[in-house]
Length: 402
Image 1 (cartoon, rainbow, N blue to C red):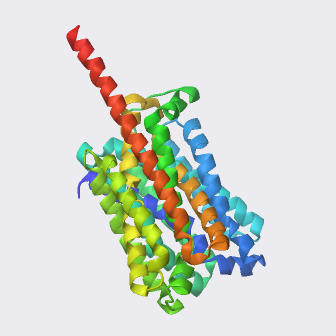
Image 2: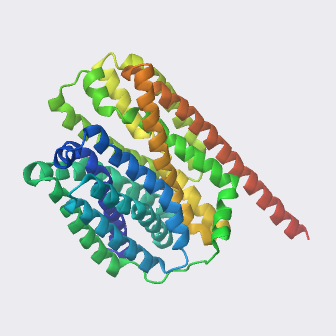
Image 3: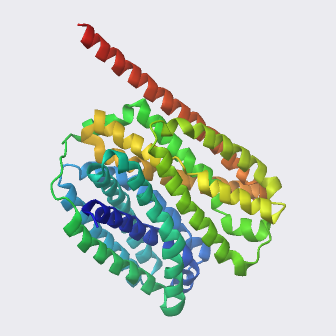
């Protein structure tokens, strides 16, 4: 096996580890509620707190640590992540659990940002999009396989052992990274102010809004995927795990499709077509939910394409920083995960509001609105890219003519 393939597998393993930590709480909410003697609704805030801390802390940690060796920074953050996750396993109170989840959330975003940066550095140009899509797929694999295993461990031995298992996985990942990561890679230093200039580029800030609304599109309905399958479509609770497994497998294929689109020179230009499909499917969902086959089919197609922009926008952020803002490369690699988490919060809050206003069967209409907004910002991103390329071409022609 080549060194690049081994590095790629370990990068996916890091994403899998982070995904298991982030998603496992959802699978053991009831167990945590009983252990800490806290209402289930209150325990549910662990998910919201994690997503919020993840999104808010990542840019600060990323910018403040950019002056240090990326190799040492990544390993140090994984050590802190290990401490936070292990604290979750030993938690004896709800407050303790909240603090431990905040520690892991503070480091998780920066860890995946640095992994993306390493991936961008070591991958040949023609394999970069594929590697990025596989790293994103690591989170889907965690959802499909890691979390059910964690829940099974929780059911058999107790929820604490699920966290202990993630700690063991973290130790293994840490050891592998020590030996496989390049220790010295080219880094361009820059002040905090200089790093943040990246965010003033319309190619970046339009892309940020497109990412946010992409996530909001998905979570405007996916937040209630279980009641949609059981209450709306009428599937039995015994078949729920199999249905979620199928959806999870389709999401892995969706990540691979995203990588294939990102590998094309015009990957982002294809996005409006997919968002047009999203708008149509989400608008039709209230009617489709009247039938099991049509309702589940729409959910599967949405799962395949709703986050197809993940890899193209990540490659866009990395390429833009690499060519014009090298001092902001790690910050650029963190933008997708930061604003995807903001989008999760926005989409899930919208889903909750829509459930009260129009009912569970029509919550997808909120997602259709967000899909339209995502499409608008993708179009604006593409126009900003075209405008920038035209300016560069004019400048090049001027130099040649002189």
